[in-house]
Image (cartoon, rainbow, N blue to C red):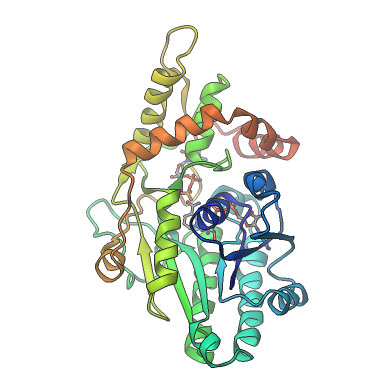
Length: 356
Ligand code: NAD
Ligand code: TYD
């Protein structure tokens, strides 16, 4: 038995692969294009592990995917592969349409051809699990109830629009062709191996480097935060017991304004790695121009997955964020290695000239 994981060298995908092989001996075929966000170093502990087969390639390469499916027939495909950063989608939406929309379509089509050729039990047990985001639902007002699975889609960024399109294609492949799909829509993740262009790792890395901590707008935008290992356990649970064709929202019951997140990170760093001048890292907070079209609030109602599948997060924000800050302090080599030339180009593009 094996599973095909796409995007398994990225932040969540690599955590998922590591957790999977810590708990099971089932072979993982890991298909990842290794874009700037893919980092094979995340998986170095699996270098000589025969349960992990890494293949560099694009989910949109139909011939490659068809070959992989024939060579290592999986019982499930878990699709993490995506362009995932909202700010990048504002600067360059094309890659998002290419991977998130066209790529997911081609992957679905290859999965359909493969699944159609399976024999009875294997066909019935096969699953295509699509990993998506709460951002497809759009922005909430302060008092609005949290997103449920039936909330209408109102994506506002090229990223969320491309993920919304992929969710619709997944749904259509189930309703039209009967492909046994599952979709998960999760809130903001944080934890080990998070690329330091996203809020939490960027704040940790910039703080330690003595750089400004750029807070967009007034910093009162609200996100729901979930420790990445909890997201991975939810996906495993949905894969095991989710009802075909269903959507499951995954979240941490943990809504926080961005500025509170930044203050928490600063407080932990003040405790665990104080500045030499004795001042707080908060001194480095800088308010910068807001993100265009910035969604004000996301909130996930994760009661369906708790009620139907018995899943709830194991970490609170307090335990998860402490583990995360400690991980970055203990893995400064990883940080140095991902801060390559292209990373610096990104910082230049996104932050230079961003007036306060
Ligand atoms: P990431 O950007 O860290 O990783 C994406 C991975 O996909 C990278 O390894 C990259 O190399 C790979 N990839 C990109 N294009 C590819 C292609 N065409 N073919 C094969 N591989 C390709 O993203 P992440 O944060 O790990 O997110 C994983 C998934 O979870 C995404 O689908 C994202 O939309 C979703 N999600 C993320 C969050 C979050 O907070 N990070 C929350 C909810 C949902
Ligand atoms: P991000 O980590 O990019 O995730 P997403 O946009 O998918 O939610 O950003 C999280 C929040 O933090 C979002 O409201 C934008 C904000 N943010 C900043 O204020 N400053 C930054 O430098 C970054 C990267 C994000």
